[in-house]
Amino acid sequence: MNFFRFLFTKTFLKHALLSVALVVVLCFVYLFWLDYYTNHDQRIKVPNLAKMDVNQVQNTLEELDLRMKMIDSTSYNPNFPPKTVIEQDPTPGKFVKENRQIYIKLNPSGYGNVSVPNLVYKTRRQAEPTLKALGFKVGKITYQPNIARDMVLELRYKGEKLNAGTPLKKTSTIDLVLGDGNRPGSTSDTNTDATDN
Image (cartoon, rainbow, N blue to C red; front, side, top):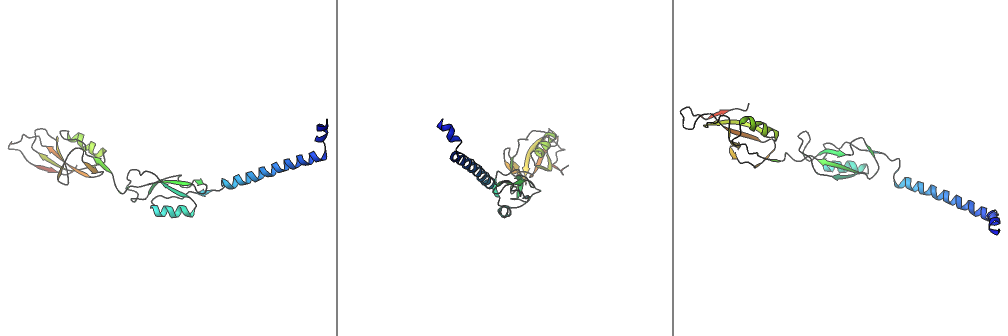
């Protein structure tokens, strides 16, 4: 019975009110700290970093209290200067918090190498689309005596014979040596050059 009487004493009520007030104050302090710690309501607009080099990106992001993280480069894009930003995440215009990492991809310094396919004994109709699909250009067409008309006898790059598997820069120009449809040693044998069609 004494316990129930104590619950209604001024001392207990005073301590109970102080405890509730302390809990309320602690909740407000915690919420204020959480708001400060998480940078709540802070909005930094992500700038457009396209075509900037690494130094420009670092300076731009440091001014905004943002960080840079480079990830693997993509395929070469001739519309962007070499070694400049070609992609970024988050994209320009998005809003982020302070110290956020911005991921960037740089444009390589040039086209990568592509292996030359084995096109010997293939027809011109097969060879040209294959080369173009791989990113090569078809250059000079030369004919040599061979009974198989328009069959590929050789591939050449800058006058040198190319072997299958040779790595060449994308967009390199490859010349084709084709059969002219004549038997070797016949009187009509000719070496004919034709320009790229």
